[in-house]
Image (cartoon, rainbow, N blue to C red; front, side, top):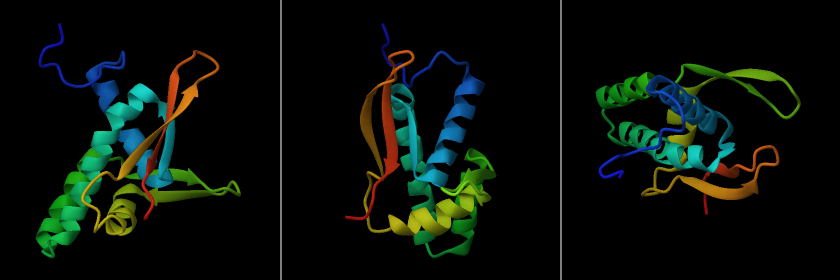
Length: 140
């Protein structure tokens, strides 16, 4: 029985799950969409939404000390930087926390929640795993 058991194990130990979660959230912030398995997407979605809410609250407070505190919390929970490839193949180093606070959080300033959408794609050909596309919601 799984009474009062929260979260998914994903056949990984605790450190591996934490690293997977950090890296997937950083990829979602940098690329604004991630193609992964449905189980990983269900694990990732609440974490990504909490990071965006943390950034929104840090910016909305108006107090510089609260914004610095929110940035430090986000920096503790995310990798420092990511190397992102553009469509033309060029590489660019992206500061994950800076992009979260400068680009993504202001975009969702008026939205009360639901920043991440999960779209089921279908089965992966190799192992028949259920795939899902996790993407940031566009302005509507």
